Length: 397
Ligand code: PMP
Image 1 (cartoon, rainbow, N blue to C red):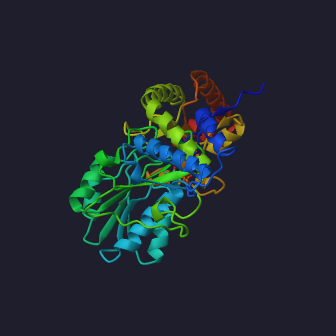
Image 2 (tube, rainbow, N blue to C red; image 1 turned 90 degrees about the vertical axis):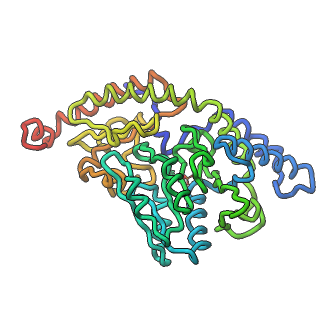
C-alpha cells in the first residue's frame, strides 16, 4: 500500500501560500510594468505594489519600510551584509566574530574574507548548540567590526539569545548582523528591540516564493550603517541593489509576510503541540535521542538521532515522507553536518540523524502517520542490522 505524501521539510523550503500565489498572478499577466518606469501607468502600478510589499515585509519585523531592501534571498543578503561591512569598516579593524554552526551563506563568506585578510573567530557551541556569551564578549577586541550570529539554526532549530547578543554588541559598539532566515515568520523578530543592526530574511521560508528575500539595515541618522551594493548596475533599491525588480516575487513576499504576521502566534502554538506529539512518540524508541535538547529552539523542528542506523536508510524506506538528513544545502555531499559535529556528536551519530520540520500545512493526521511509519521503518532496519545486534548484545555503546 502506498502512503500519501507527507512534507516534513519546511526548514528547506515551504509551500507557497495560495494567497501569495494569487496575489502574484496579475503581476505576471496584465501588470507587467517595470517598477522603475514610473513615467507611465504600467510602471506606477508595479511601483505601488512594491511600495505595499515593502510595508508588509517591514511590518513583519516591526521595521520601517525604508529599512528594507529587496534581494534575491538570504544568501545574497548575507553576502551583502558581511562583505560590505568588511570593506567599509576595514580602516577600523579586520575582525569578525561568528559561530561554527552558522549557515554556509555566512561561513563561506567569512572564509572568502579570510583570504582577503580578515581575521575571523568561529565561536564554539556546547552539546545543545548554544554559544557562551562570556566568550563572545571576551572575543571582542578593538579590531572587531562585526558580530554575525544567526537567530535560529536551520538544522536543529536551536536559537541564539539574540537580545543578549544585541546588548553586548551595543555595549561594545560593534555592529550586529543576524541571519534570521529560519526565525522570521515563526518567532517575533524585532531588530529594534533586539539590538540587531542588519538582518537577512528569505520569503520561501515563510510561505512566499523562492528567489526573493530582503536585507534590513537599521536607520541610524547620526551614524548611518555603511552598506553598499554588491550587485552593481542601475539605481534600484536606493542604489543598494542593481537590477530590475522582480515585482511578482516581491508582491508574493509581501502577501506571505502579511499572512505570517497575522498567523504566527497561532501557528507557533499549534506547531509546538504537534512537534511535541511527534517527539514524545518517536523518542520512546530505544537509543533514539533529540539533538539540541533545549527549550531554546524553534517550535516546528526536531533533529533526531536514531543510533546505529543511517538516517539515509530511513529516508529510503520512507519515500513518501520528505525529511532531511543534515541541511538541504549539504545534501548530495557525504560530508557529515558541521552543525551536529560542532555540538559534539560522533560522525556515526551525525549520519544517524534526521531533521523533521513541520509547517503551517502539517496536519495532526500527518503527524500520526509519520510517527507510525518512522517507528516501523526504524524497527525493520534495526532488526536486520548486525550493528544493532552488537549493540543489543552489549558489545557497543
Ligand atoms: N541562512 C539560513 C539560516 C538558511 O536556512 C538559508 C536557507 N537554507 C539561507 C541562509 C539561504 O537562504 P536563501 O535560500 O534565501 O538564499
